[in-house]
Image 1 (cartoon, rainbow, N blue to C red):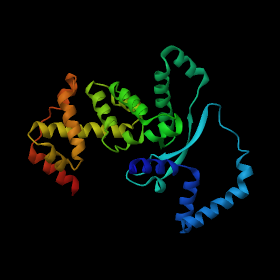
Image 2: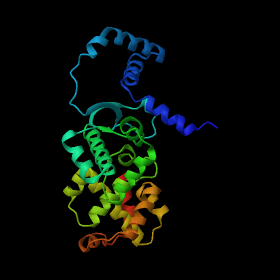
Image 3: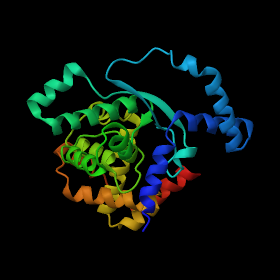
Image 4: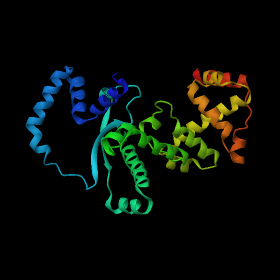
Length: 273
């Protein structure tokens, strides 16, 4: 039996390269076929190949990697998505040997995962689990998923495409933001710890407050999603979080503002007008 999911995975990995990006640009800019774009690419390599080989190298321990841009829309095929080149550190002689000696191999890998993901994110790119497993660490996806589960238990946000773009079932970065807010952390500190802008942090917290208020006056998840025009999955995640959160007193007071159903629909109607 052919594993279609596995085939799609390798196909996605194959399309993350400069050649593919160049052919996309040529195809779109000149409105030509993939065959014609490939012919142009081959000519470029024939003319400029020797020059490319003489470009100054990056620092020892670093590598250049073609990844999906943070601006790439979820659901779009990798071959058609915006990509950028980022520089990540796969080996740091001054730091990594010391970590492995004192904390072991697993701790070193987790440290490296955090570093490469943050480096890519700061340059406008987002790594995926497949990137980490097959292109950087040469290990199984299960190993990477186990490390990511560790980060979630420790409330450590790792900026991957799945967490930043909310692809699949994960909502970890939003959940972490709300947890830190419930603990009384300042917005600036939450922004720094989660690699999200102050605007995004405030937006997620405000949505959580609205959901909490509507739940308090009797709305169920389906009606909350409809009233606020947001994903039912997000509402469900926030409601589950609300039931389990240990919220400090001054944050509890912020969640206790009274709101009526009539006020909700009046406010929403005003906004849409």
